[in-house]
Length: 214
Image (cartoon, rainbow, N blue to C red):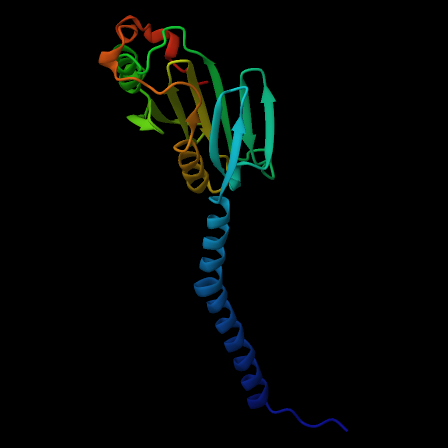
């Protein structure tokens, strides 16, 4: 025998289910998802030690861009493949420094600094800085709908050129991962000397140190 179900009971049941769904959705989007996203970000930025004696470098690479390593003569490519092949990557190249200078020349820096206006590159950014005691330049510019970041570091024996491509997903997070990674980059060899301590700096040829962004 079927018990009669009143319209009021059906309405109450609908309200109860709907209310539970709203509460669950609120918890999911207001509390759980932000905490989950933060955990994923923290995991992606977790440093992993990496050293390449052939290139003469060592650094702490963010875990989010260090799942795969590809080594070619004079360079290494650290990456995390994306679902559509557009994951983040960090490419580092190392070459000899024929002049033995410890700093990039003012002429070389002037070229990098003016490239944005010379070639009318929107959102071009230039930064002259130090990376683990070495003279360095960081350049940010758009490419393919996102920003890429290039790093140049010089030591008396080596010139390091690196480029970060953040990929298609979480570009801001992966750009942060690249930036934090290569600010820990150590170049092996003798310590850098001040510009005034070496005449080689005055003779340095800017074109030898200009990193050609594709």
